[in-house]
Amino acid sequence: MRRALPSVAVALAAAVGITVSGWVIQAAALPPPTPATRVAADASAWFHEHRLVVDVFHVRHRRMEGACLRGWFPRPHRPKARASLLSVAPDRTLRVPARRHVWVAAARRSGQPGRILALIGCSGELAPALAAAAQSGGDLTTERTYAANQPAVALELEHARRERLTLYVSPRSYQPLVAFVDLHGMEATARLFLARATPRLLSRFHLL
Image 1 (spheres, rainbow, N blue to C red):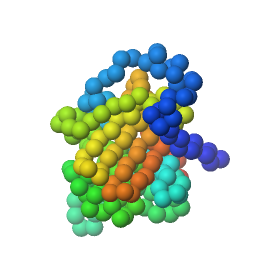
Image 2: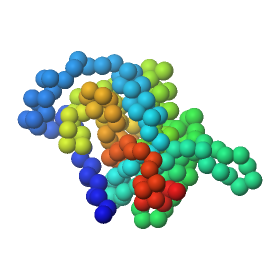
Image 3: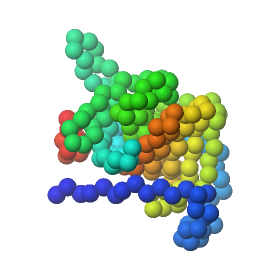
């Protein structure tokens, strides 16, 4: 039986004045703030360890389920290449070549929703973006907040004036929970479920 995935629930504490009573109580027990570069590095490690991410996307007032698999895939008459396969229900699959400059590629194609979904829903896209930010110590900030019905830390990466990626992670393990991107006014959100690449899941999302 197919199990329904939880819906995305992101509520920024700043926007609600930190009125979630449960969050106020739990916040007092959280460890001291960690440097943003450490949060980015640990979150990137989570993505490196998981080839498969199951996603619930919200974009342009639409909700879509999908999954993204990272790996080496065959090409016609050419050697295998590193890429990500993004499957979005019901039957659309997008192949995303591995890129070093993720933000640039996404910005140039900001009118293509599939490329935006790959940026926030694929470990092959998120891991290098976070690792690069952690190494450079660029425009990274963290903030305690609330996401996916639980306390979280919001890690914000601002690449340019109109390019912003926010990753919501667990406040203790920094496991990724939700990703949000705003690229030149186009916004998208993904609830992230890091998963094992089992035959059952790959078959469900047409990634075999």
